[in-house]
Image (cartoon, rainbow, N blue to C red):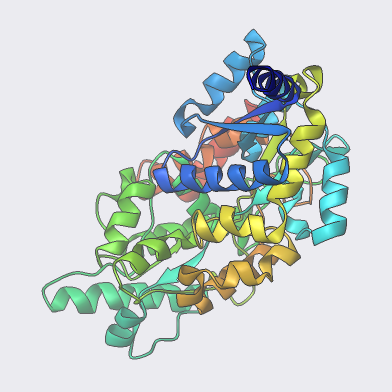
Length: 429
């Protein structure tokens, strides 16, 4: 028996040594998101007992500094969840590998929504694999529209949106408790930048032309900024310093009737058993176009994965995550309505639509899914990164700072847009 146990221990030791351990970083610190990642890891390890996967949480606030520090010290993980700006940063640091083969394989199996690939193509290759996306649409409280506008139909044009925001604000204030018709931010942060660009996308604003030349200081940009300024009059006072936390809190508390935003609030409404929530395509001017911001989140693979001989294990895990039943965990289960599938197969899967939150707010999620097809992201409007300076421009919140100057009266519209383009120029190489 003793010999048998010794032999068994030897076998286990050999198997342990043969197991490949891969490590990834992500930036989703909330406990339920960490739990969703761990659920996916356990399912993967069950099907792939020769691979061990370890998740490590790096808060978004530390993502850039820790990534660059790890690159410089040679201590990068095998791969990292990311967004376009961070992937560009890693690319410019010569730390990641092209992933064209993975994109091709995933596309052939599950068919990528093409708009989601644009932010990760530059210099002729793909450098990030989109895992989920975040479309910004018009969220609204149907009961407020019915009470103050006499309809549950949301506005469809800029003029209708402005009038609706004004009516709700004025009529509710006459009743003694002001409900602000629109929720907009003007803080020097990414949240503001995302809301502003959603408005800009309606009139075709492009940061760069196809060759990477700045095209920001133009009449269509002036028009979008002017509209944002007018609409902002019906947003809560003090929102010049708001970001995600403040606007979500006020919308959930019933202080805001409508806002261009991501769909992730439905989880909170579901848990409160409050079903007064829906969404619509972002309104646009009669001579504009149906458009909105999208923010695809990706995975990029560090060169260290190749050096350690972990590349094939990493690819296997990424392909596993893109399987529709697994991707539903990373989207509908992790953050329903905010993290949205990027492939046709995952968007149509029963696992996604049978999620209780997704099912409860079915119409809202249908609007969100549709928005993935025509959304764009600043700097990537041509289907690729026309100029890699967009990473630094976005990171500096130039568009957000511009709008803050306008709504506070520090600058006029044309002056602020000119200032923004000048600041963007300082990042060009």
